[in-house]
Amino acid sequence: MSTLNEILNPKQQVEDGWTAILKKANANVFPVFSLEESKITPYIECTLANLRVSDKPQQHPYQSGTSEEELLYTSWSGTMITRVVTNRNTNSDKHVPMVGLVTVESARFRMRFNPATLPFHAVLDMKQSGLVETTDGLTDRTEISHEMLIVVRDDAWDGI
Image (cartoon, rainbow, N blue to C red):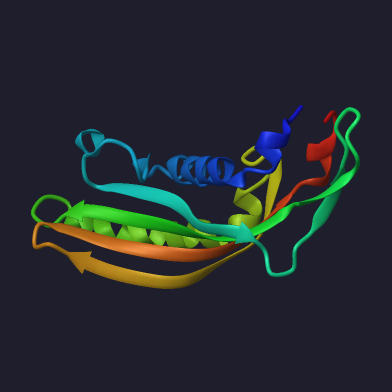
């Protein structure tokens, strides 16, 4: 059974789902805002940014207790930013394979974002929209951006 907060707040669920997908593929993954001290290269960070109601919004009727029925937005678009980080002196050889892993897993998003991974949401689209490489001489970073279209699963409303 889901709650309205879980249904209407896909950010955490989608980030957790993407992290789980990458971990299952044997990547060392962290949320982007986790403590720097706990991160040992090579690693991947991810965050869902710019989350907004989609351009072609879907809505679902909702009524709670004695309140009047209202239409709630149930589709969002956003940018998943996945950052691959390696140390140039110790593990830069792992950088390109890790970028490849992110590319392969995102290409298989329809299979990866299943009800076990995302119980309340479905990812209808995940397409690469950018890749930026940076270095500070010691640390190499590649940020891979994917535009995502996320909707509430029909069965997520059961029991609300």
